[in-house]
Length: 244
Image (cartoon, rainbow, N blue to C red; front, side, top):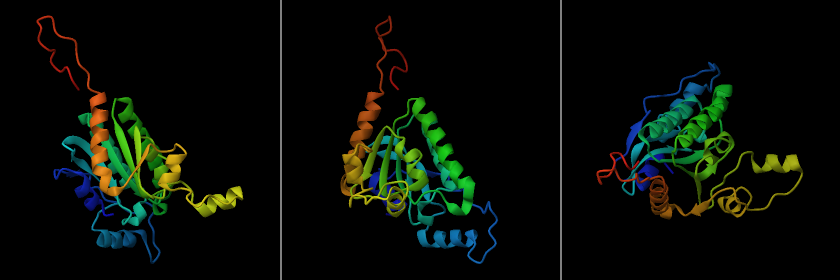
C-alpha cells in the first residue's frame, strides 16, 4: 500500500509532512553500471516518493499524533541513513510535543547499498524511541506486509502496543534460512501475524479496513491513561497545567 494512501486512510485530512527534504546520497560511492544513485532515481519515479518512509504530524480520530509510514515500493522499504534520520526526527518531535506516536512498518530490512551505515540505524532508531518512551511517550507500531530484517529487530517491536495487519509476513531472517539453520520444517503459517499473536509476540491483529477505528480506540485509551489530575489549590480553583 502506498504511504500516502495509508495516510489518507488513517489521518483526519490534516497531515503535515516533516523531513521530506532529507534525501539519500551515495555514501559508499558505487561506480558500477547499476549504481545506487540510478536505483534511487528509478524508485523515485516508480513510487513518487523521495525515500522509503513518510513522517509528519496530524490527527487520528481527532487525537493529535506523530505518524510515520514506511513504503515497500521504495527500495523494498529498506532502512538506510535517511529512513533512520527521518524516523529519529519524528520520535524527537513527538517527544518535544508530548504527542502519541504511530509508526506503520513495511520493510525488507537494512539497506545493503549503504552497508554499515544502514545497520547503524537500528541502534539509532532504538535509542531515540526508548528516550521518547522513557519521557512518558506512548507508542503504537502497526506491522504490515512485510516487516522483516533490521526494522523488525529494532524499533518495530519496541512500542507500547504492537498491532499487525491480518496475514502480514513478519520476522527477521527468511523462512528458508531458518529451516536450513535449525534443520527442521517450520509450520505453514510461520512468521504470519496470526502465528505471532498465537505465540505472544504481538498484541493484536487487525483487518486493514478496521485499523483506523482500532487506532482511535488505542490512542484514546493510551492518552487518557497518561492524563493526571492535580489536587485542588487552596483557593478552591484548579491548579494551572493540571493535565498533560
